[in-house]
Image (cartoon, rainbow, N blue to C red; front, side, top):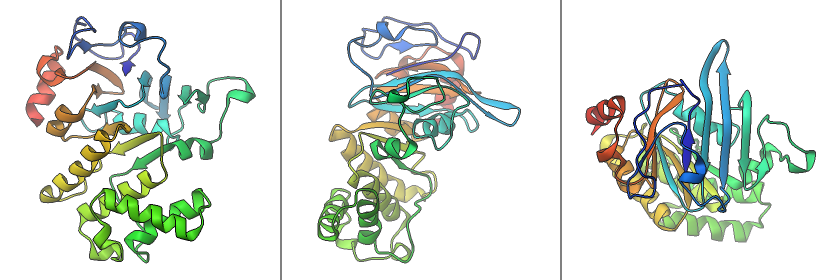
Length: 286
């Protein structure tokens, strides 16, 4: 995974040998130096800019994610990390730049009509788990998961419920399948939301601070479900402040501030980063 920011967009550290384990990578390092150029990315963002009114919150950020990678994006509030994540499935539509998922263009960048996909097509490939659970309160856990299968995939009812039950089992909630959201803890509700997203068999999973709305004692069960999903080989992009979890799971880690990438790197990043600002943030959180 490679993330770069435009020249002058933010402070950078010094790049080290990208072939080394835990190498630190900073803005402006070409993708070819970091990954096999013959390996096509699953997600590729190029020159992403996003404005809210007169304020530009993303300053031409690039991001590539390859199959099976677990990418962690972190930084202070207001740094643009959630906006960047939400650009991947067009919940936030970039004002400029290219959004390619599995080789199909979805962003505002000009391309041939045959290359451009629809938002609905994109969201069938990309699952997302939010800070809030967004469960239907009048439906059981099983019904909440099965509904997406029946609506989005037009799956027959018996097959949808079999697949929904399997998804709940994968996050340890099959015995709570008949419970309504109000009968579940916050951690259990978030795991239902994970099961709902995973049941649709996405190629990429996005997590937007999935533990931020939980009591501290419930965070661990959600992280355990995410850890199990990562171990299955799912491609994941995670925005989180849980840096101990990020240190464990992140194949590639990106620190953002003020709409740009300050520094990024692979495993070992949290101990080997070179930017003073990155070190300051990590030291304050860990």
